[in-house]
View 1 (cartoon, rainbow, N blue to C red):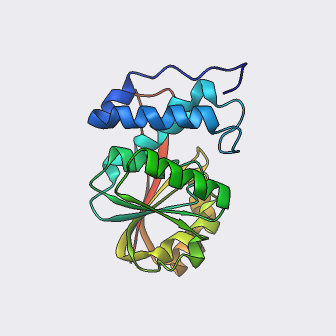
View 2: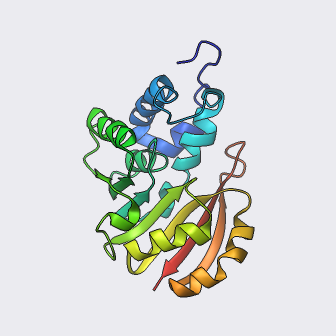
Length: 211
């Protein structure tokens, strides 16, 4: 952990979002705080906002998931995949990450946190041999929708759902991706704003059906 910055105190909302799994969420957050910068998983200025901007930002998505198989594309530090797996032990997660050192981190967290509902796949999404096998797909801070849809939509079964965490510019991304939506049969697109009145920073989720 850096000498200059301290980990953000645990927000009160953490208890509500993680419920009975708060201790596990806390353990993951503390591990990420200790090792995240040295492993290149988070930036050097993220500790004072780690809970709010990253952990709870991801946890807000948990109620949108349903029992089944969820793929997290470009899992990286485990945001949102590890966080969601902690909050939703009734859901099976496949974390898809191509970089070896990040895969090692994810596998270590799965083992240390005893997450029996998680498997880690080292691959790019398009090489993961998961086409048409997932019920839902998540991704966070990966790329713009016009680039992200072609690598996530094919992973879904017919009627599967995209649940993608996006930034404030998501409406513009939607406008730029209309041709991609048609090509990959993306329907009923909507943007959900989560966490208003709960956290200082809201979470925006692009949600759509692929059929």
